Length: 158
Image 1 (cartoon, rainbow, N blue to C red):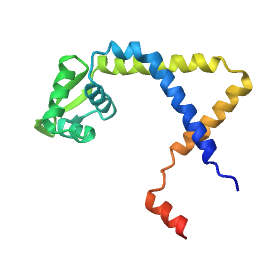
Image 2 (spheres, one colour):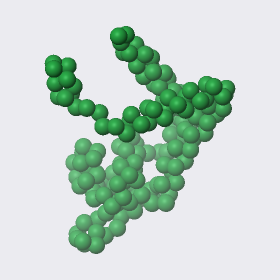
Image 3 (cartoon, rainbow, N blue to C red):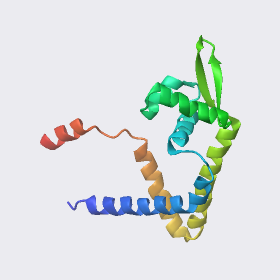
């Protein structure tokens, strides 16, 4: 049976080209953010984990609690993140994305989606159907947990 590795490498390369092109087209939007990469990452984490504590934010970003606190403070001052009191423990603050923070992240996603839609609009029906079918299958595979290295090794030695 022929190895699928060359075709897999080709698909990965093509996906990297698409990502790089999206990144290049999005550069003007990203440059006007006026956020450091650490601040942006913190905003994304807070958006996905509403009600996260500063300590949990630090764990997610693999930074210390003081660094996470500084990131949160900056985002709060910018109006991108809100702090609320933990009803279970008034000593703890919970972080959540503000309307402005959520709007910023939505805008960034929409820029990418707009570019993708334009590219997809350049394809004919058969090409678009092929892309849709392939992405549907890939999306399903992405929802399937990958085997860990240990189970792969056991299968190969069996």
